Length: 166
Image (spheres, rainbow, N blue to C red):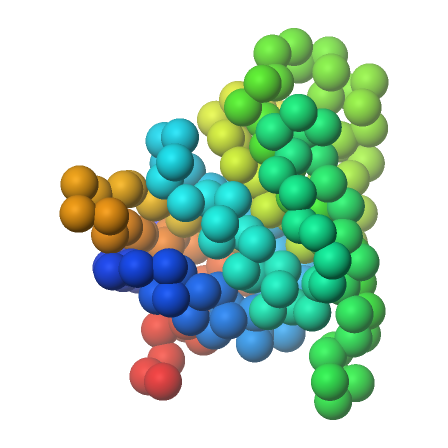
């Protein structure tokens, strides 16, 4: 559908900076973002930076065992962007598609709000296309190679916002 945005995170500060840039885009609060990468690639770290940039305070837990952690996003400082909800999913331990129905995930994905999905390949075919997909690859030197793909018109808009010069 488009060309990916290719990034290099030389350190965690680069990861945080990208999360802050994305958090500044008001349309993000209605997006579904898939995070691809192996164990230790930095998916949860990026989610923590994004949620912090969106104003979440308190502990931001990895949903590895709970599968989903909900968060209330406050209105932005100007009041131009209303409060909303965010859900951080980690489907690493997901094994049975019936869990999807039993847990009410279909309803969560249909509801307004931001969805952040780690290990989306474990639920392939159960959701619609993600607005954005981040492919994060850890390198031997500790840096990260990142590709950001858009999968919907909303994703294209977010990708364009990320691609703007700083």
